Structure formats: structure tokens, C-alpha cells
Picture 1 (cartoon, rainbow, N blue to C red):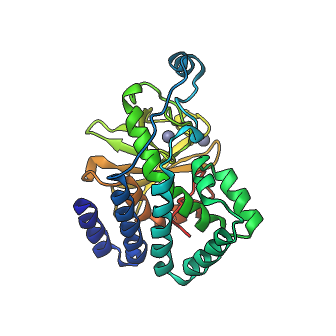
Picture 2 (cartoon, protein in one colour):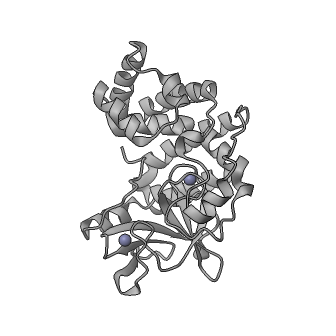
Picture 3 (cartoon, rainbow, N blue to C red):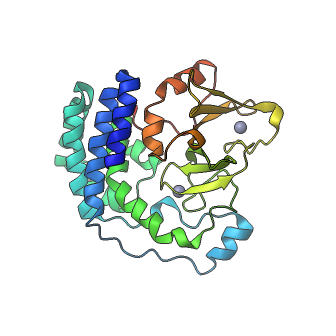
Length: 283
Ligand SMILES: [Zn+2]
Ligand SMILES: [Zn+2]
């Protein structure tokens, strides 16, 4: 947490405009870290033939709904996140009020929703039915379950080899990556799972979304005056992924680095590219 705070101060000095969103992020992270110390997670049992399925069929180890969720801790965290969101800005405050009303009127069973696993489609459907802002609702639900999901991922980390999977989706849970990371002097490239946070190796020239590896149609640009954050885009599927270049940056939280470079997303979108896994914090 100390390193996170330091990095947030550093970014705020350079780009004061990010102050509000980074302060919000810090509060959410603090609440999530607190929950992590007392989490009770049931062990996740793997299918007997998982090794075979993984190697031959390219199936991920789990599916999103297979993660064990500590429902009690997640509900408590949901309450805390609602308080933090309320204080963040008027739009969120208004949304939190509506969400709370819907839950209090038992139109949504929060416990059941958290327990059954929190796929985006399901959350969107419920938000639609109850007239909620999808992004705010999804943000609150996903971030309430996140400590459990990350703990599950840590529990199974030893089952996988991050260096050999080389596919565009997460070997742990099958989700798409939200970011790509360049590491070590040689610039090994990794993808960062948008759901469970697992990281796995990928080729330097590869679009995770359409598996394009033709160098003529894969390009990137760095932010102005920056050599640590860039946009890797693909002219075949017209989608992009943000890359954090840790060769010139001290180890830090990828999600924070993503949040602090939303200006790069704006540039990429202006150039006509789409981000398949949107930044969940931009509500
Ligand atoms: Zn994953
Ligand atoms: Zn592509």
C-alpha cells in the first residue's frame, strides 16, 4: 500500500487532472486489501482431466463462475464500496442510492448474485431489468467479489506455467486481457487478465483479440513525452490493448497505471480503434 500511495503522489504531481480518480482508486484498494486478510474461501476442485483439456483443447483451468466467493466478506465490502462511491461524485452518489433501493426492495438478491459468480452479461441483464447504470452497478459487484477471485487465482497459480500458454485469453479463467505488460530488459511480453489478474506470456507481435501476428498490420504509439505507456493496435480487427512498459518503470500496480493514462485511450479511440475490455473505472 505504501508503494501505491507513493506512485499515486508521483502521478498526481505530473498530471494533477487524475487526482480525483486516483484518490478514489486508493480508497477502493484499501478496502479490498482489508478484506483480504480475513477471507474464507472454499477450495476449488479441478476437473480430473483438466491437464489434458488445457493442453489439447486450449480450455482454461476454470470458468468465471467456478471461483469460490466469500459471500459474507463480499457483501460487507459492497457496503463499504457504496460509501466510497457516494462520496466520490454526485453521479455515483445518485446511482448508489438507486441501487440500494432496488436491493432493499428485494428486487435484487445481492448474496445470490455474488455467490453465483459475476459474469458481465448477467450483471448487465439485471441492471437493464432494474433500470440501473450498468457501469456503476457492474463496478460495485465486480470489485466486491474481486478479493475472493484473486485469492482463488493465487490458490491455483502453481497449476499453470505462465510462460507456455501463449494464447490471447487467460489460462486460469478464459477471460480476455485488459492490459499487456513488457518486462525485463529483453522485453518479454505478458497479458494481464481482466477478471482474475493472472499474467501469462505472449509473443511480442501478436493481437490477443484476433490472433493476428503479421507485423505489417500491428503497430504501436507511445504517449507524448512518455516511454512507459503505449497503445498496441491491430489493423486487422481495429482493436487495441494498452501496454505498460516496465523496462523503464519501477514495478507498480497495472490497474493504477491504466487509470493514470486514460488520455492514451482517448487518442486510440480518436484514431478509430476499439478497446474490447473497457476500463471499468471510467464511470
Ligand atoms: Zn483470468
Ligand atoms: Zn487484431
